[in-house]
Length: 512
Image (cartoon, rainbow, N blue to C red; front, side):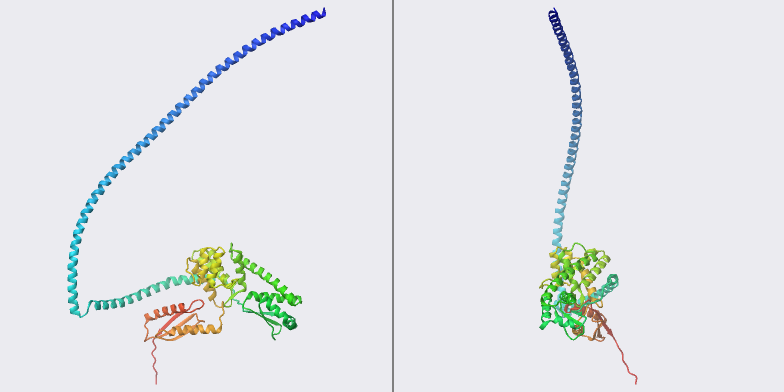
């Protein structure tokens, strides 16, 4: 019974499940159909909306295009109007040109007729001139050429007088303005630069504590002193001078190496050829380092940057060189400062002027003997180490051995002369000094009318006495100019030479 009941229950449950599933499936199908229908309705609505939007955009685009086409058509119409106006203007100009061409043809024909009349009149005038010339020649007794020569001579004399007067006026005006301004700039430049006046010789004195050291320096049979001279290239003079040894050489760098080497050897006490060579080699390296350090310190002090390391080394070597007794590095620094001051006074770049002034004498300290003058060799070195063209030109032109291409060149030349010509800057051999003064006086005496000459102020001024009966006042001015030009062309001198020509009339009587 129980099994049968269970089976019946199960069967009833299966039938109920089947009926429920069928009902659920039917309801789900209806729901899907309703969802699909709703989706179709929404899609239709969206389709209509999109079509409306597209239609609206199409209409907007169409209106914009129509506006753009209208604007382009308007521009085309304006361009056509302008072309028509230009065509009308060109037609008018063409008509005007044709009219002027016709007028020019008429004027040309008129001018040709007038030229024929002028030619005829010219022939008549030439005939009359020849007749008048024949009459004048017969009356004056002179030919045409002779009359021309006399007229030219008279005109020459008149032109000379007028030119001399004109030159005097120009010279007076230049002296009142340019000379005053130049003096102001130069004096102000000199006043603003402080310089050292100490100079160096070609001899260095090495002091020792006692004369016993002399024997140790000489060594057995002179081997120590020979080794020292061979290593340094300096002549060592050991004489009777108490507590002193003289180091003689034209190269200051060698003298400095010898002095420092001797100082170390004497302090160390070990003096023999091997030790001498070792110390000299060490001192050479120290001096080379000192040279580079001096160059760097100089450029830093002057505010000059960007120099090639080789140029810095050359600047440092200037410390151990001299020119006419003047230390070359001091001269270069002084010239650089003067250039900067003068350039600022003239409204130029003071940094470039200072750079050119510092480098202007680098050709005097070459590592090898050049065949060029020091100015040209210095310009070549500056160009090699990438200095600017105006700097190279200022270096090469400061002794007029190269054409000046910029305002820096005359500034460097002037400041170099100021530094070398100031009192106490340079020394000169007595014989050369006396010869230069005699040459100055003899050169002035070679001119006619000169009675006496006096070279004064160490050859910086030449006074020329002329005879009052031989030269007049105008000739004195031309004489001073001629003497100055001849001195400039034929003589070598530091700075400048002032030529003063004196003409005086003396009346002498005696009371008896």
